[in-house]
Length: 468
Ligand code: FAD
Ligand code: NAI
Image (cartoon, rainbow, N blue to C red; front, side, top):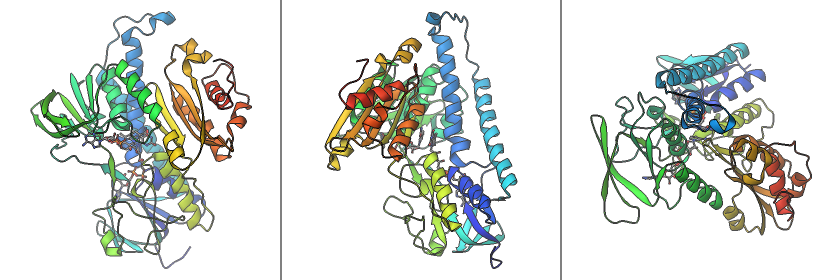
């Protein structure tokens, strides 16, 4: 350790980027501190993001299965299934607590010091936390992101009428009509939760299609399936304002391209139009660190910012705003700081929308592959032809593999299926190993599993699936 500083490494923020970086750094022998201003560790993901949303997605799925009579064909008759929202929310809180306590335990176990409070730069090696000044040889910014505000629509999570994702994870009762502004990941996940619990859900999306950035065929299939589930999806529409009066909200919307405005009444409005990096209020100006046009902190391949001794990871830097991307950057940055080589392949980062069916992707979409000049071969296999999905009666969706026509290398995999989030892992691994579609097609997959659809889609790239 270098005695000039209090710590070898100080990390600002304890989200999946920060806490993972802290643990890895401590494992590698660095004297490490992590500053977090929240009451609990784990950042957005554990406290108000990935974990509570998945807790509610799971619970609401169970409720819908029991309540809708969907279990009857399997010989399971449930009568009088009722929603106990209080218990459901309490279970979510308990799931979150289990994990945030877990991170605290891991900090103690690895001797990472949690400095409680808000950190602000004094200089490139010094931060102020309350009245205390702490120095470190290296500082990593892992301050994450927050909800992008929508002008004319004031979020009030306490009020519970116009909310963001944090408010939508804790509504005290099921709204009759929920309007979601933004047909992205949060809108569809949290919209699914409240629809399953009984709300009528309208999704208002500015663009012509939901789920921007996803493969074109996936976006189409997803919209079709969500409509079948009862979502009212209004694309090409923008919200120009929303007002809450007591327990009701009135929105004004108009066609995105301009045209006649109309009003929509709702009991709850969820604003989910994206997130933006947290770069304000902690003295970046004091160290002369500027952000790019999108408000992100630019970094090099070793996560170094333009300021010596200061690096950055996670939602605050360019790239997808995903927990596992932040975590892998956390490991890599700690390894660089400890004098090792930290690798993360930004071309192979899976993303998953945890709706039913799930929607998962890794690598290039068909559109992106063509834009990049690849001639592509595409193989598709419907879940309808997968024996396990058929048996379980969850046949919605497909697996689509995009391969380079010349080399057969897998460029991207896109899955709509109940277990897509789990199935995508093998695709990511195959791509990480530089697999061809033939490699996947000749890999033995256990029967009967949903994953066989990945193998068959690879066989389809080759032109010869068995079950289609
Ligand atoms: P964050 O998790 O945002 O953590 C940053 C932490 O830094 C915060 O705790 C903050 O309090 C602290 N902080 C900031 N500034 C300071 C300061 N100056 N001093 C002290 N502390 C500070 N991603 C997935 O991969 N899968 C999912 O299923 C998923 N679901 C999501 C659901 C929702 C509703 C939301 C909102 C997000 C979801 N995400 C999901 C995204 C995921 O939460 C983020 O990508 C991830 O949390 C980013 O990690 P991070 O470490 O960069 O920052
Ligand atoms: P998003 O970027 O996924 O979707 C926002 C949507 O809102 C887009 O479709 C966009 O076109 C639309 N939009 C933007 N402005 C609009 C306007 N004025 N009116 C109507 N529509 C408008 O952002 P979202 O859903 O808020 O999620 C934020 C981020 O959090 C995600 O991008 C993702 O990084 C992360 N997240 C990840 C999850 C996961 O991995 N399962 C779950 C939830 C969030």
